[in-house]
Length: 219
DNA sequence: TCATTAACACGGG
DNA sequence: CCCGTGTTAATGA
Image (cartoon, rainbow, N blue to C red; front, side, top):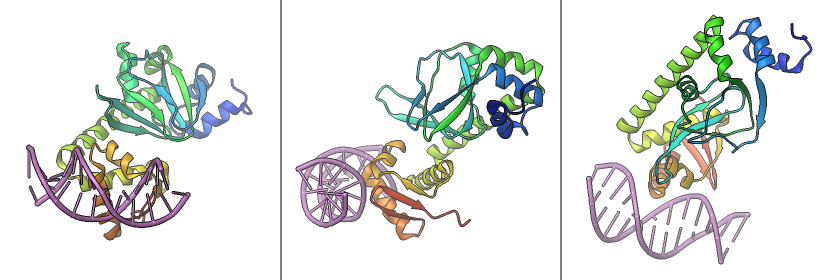
């Protein structure tokens, strides 16, 4: 039995007590490792062997792939209580990582050994549902992202990009340049500047040098 | 039509 | 002077 005053146990309990049963929380404590990351740190890279799966305690991680020319394709963000579906897949098939994971904010992760993760799939119902639910939500999210790229105009994609960005950072004021936005959306900087100007005129955003304020959280 | 590349002007730090 | 931004012209799908 874990001590009720154990800080690790306290932390995990406060984050996950509504998700997992008591016994599993205790296993997290004894079998898992908590690690802290600064913003912009690479947690996982393409080709890396996967030995542990991450569970986000706090902060935010960006998950993406890269092509031969180094173009990024954003897959999804991991936030509080999320885990990485691609990692889960790599775990079960014992393959190398096909994705890159970089922290957006200061982030705390709980790492769980893949051996344990498989054992718990059988032992704990809450763990099994958590993993399946995680697969499900990521798949839905990625289908949505694909739909967005294929069917939406650049303007709609830009609005969605800003909304998502404001959402994950929990901050409607983003510090970002048109250049960065352009490369993340695989568009030209000229086009972004033109659209940003339009969005500003339409009252969707306010902007100044290096910062954009997204004005939609009145909805 | 809509987006891209190239080129340039403006202005704040 | 550099960088981010705003704009124009030419070109392509």
